[in-house]
Length: 505
Image 1 (cartoon, helix red, strand yellow):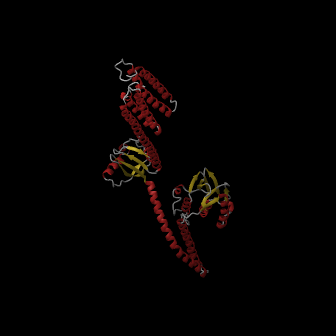
Image 2 (cartoon, rainbow, N blue to C red):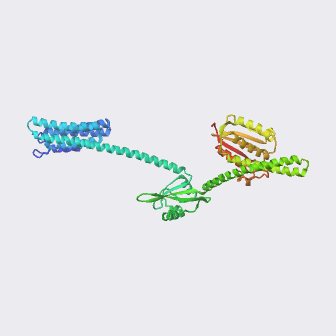
Image 3 (cartoon, rainbow, N blue to C red):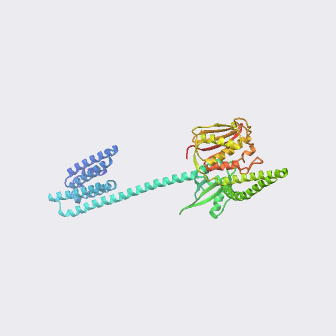
């Protein structure tokens, strides 16, 4: 529209002072008016966004080409210089339009210039020598359109690549954040000035729970945890320095600080990892227990053979000294303690084999009914002591031998501490969301409060004849089958609960 307005103003100049339209001032004036009207219409269609973009683009470029060529005819043809204005339109077409349309626009402009030159030669008012200038101008049209289109295509490829990389970077950042947030350790990202740039959820919970002044990204570490800032400065001077645990949290929990360098060409930041010492100690304890378990299993295996010889010798002596009551009493003591040691050895060896599970689909209603019959027969226990409350459709995935051992141990404890009345021991199976819970209750006094914390410790027992491994082994067997064993205290004492996933294997 601006170009059309300038042409219209130039056409109004007095004769002799006109820059364009010297050959036909009136026709140039009319063309300028038409061009201005066309430009005004295109402004309206652009604001209305009708018709669609590619149609509007084609109409505008073709309109520019036609109007400028028409004004060239009234201004002296190629020598007027108006053809150079087509370079701008063709460059715009090359940047925006599709490949074939770009070449079409260039061909249309070049053809128009040649037609204007040919008509001028035929009318004998233009020189044939201007064909070279017209051809050169047409070549410039094609080169301009082609170069603009190539540059635009490269730009679009670069934009698509940048957009794809931006999506990848965003996805990677989200994945990294999810991974970091899922970590049990606190993770804090620090810049070169010791300011907190990012922290995972565990670190935020830790700092908030400790009542520290953490105000989000940009918080200075020395204002939040001054001791950690001192550690950071020491670490920058001596990266191999190992720092002692620090006390954080309302209850004085200890966390082990560890720094990891984050370096680029301009700045040096760091990642601060706060490892929970409780979890580290638990892992160390598990490693120790595993090593101890292997050692005790080997010792138990070595004990079994001489123990069998002792038991066999005691049996022979009992047969030989059947009339000597003093000897018989001593032999009974030997036999009883040999059986106790054998039971202990059996428990230790079973503990070492807890990870060898062969899970199967177990319907608890059928399993517990059969189990109680066998248990009462083998332990000489009256069946009336037990009451079953079963969910008929309760099915779990468990190693059958492990489940029998766990339930048998819980039932032995329940019978031992019950009042030995009908229904003194109750086994309840119930649904809990997607889990199955097995409760073993008795009507006894329950476990003393001071013993609850140590209930599942190995070798802890309140019985003079007990090994202290029953509950510990039961808990480990449940863990090996992706289940849990807990002791729940209630107002009437307490009971044990096994929780496992519902469904078959």
